[in-house]
Length: 329
Picture 1: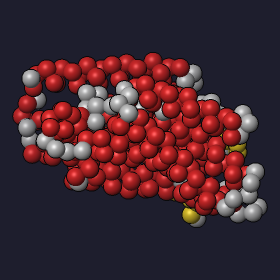
Picture 2: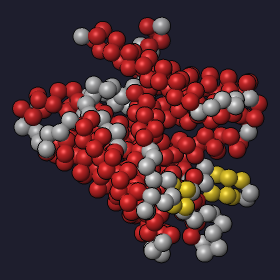
Picture 3: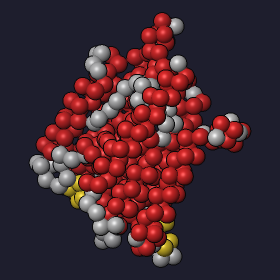
């Protein structure tokens, strides 16, 4: 095993990522055997629908966790952005493109507010994000008068459903998962930012030893806030992915998506203590969570089973991270 871990290929790709890919393939094989319908193309597209918005949430929160913080507001912020943008589109008649920009802007505003409270006001990220989670739920509910919002369908007679091509496009009678292409492009950009830019280096350093970074003369508040701004912005992008796949948005929801996004990051190798993060691992974690949800539904079980399995996976992932740190120390 040690020889395998130390091989050039494994070191380049990452042992954790190889294991996760193996788990993903194993899960797919098990679900396909238990439920033959799981092999259908429609099932794969259904699983990807969940992966799109969850992927953007996971990418964003990866930056925050890398600083040693946490953000429990991303799910409700996503729903708030979708509600505000949808309300302006369906009730006030703003163009679709404007509504999509509003979604991103709402996420950006919450990211700025969260980053300011944590970095400049000194609030613990747990408390700040919990407060903003409630604020996002409240804003979404008040703005829509507690009514659900339904974005235009792809077949809308006025052509307002064109934005759905960002998630799934029909070409020659075949549905093409364009959302997956966009998600992977954004993931590559995030990986470059995290691993090859000053922003990423400082964010990771903050998670490793914030005080040492501050004493070296770096403006830690600025870089910590940037992590939350990135997270909030991607929550706004996730709102677009959500309405592109599921249409109807209800106020007061979104909490469970926080857990799935954070679980994807931890599963993918991002350390809850900060300083270590993997964009590629987060994406693989998202695929595992999405496949798990679709597989459980295909087998005829309730979604509650997904929570049980996800919880166990997170516990094992965190335990493995703690054990790894103890061995290094």
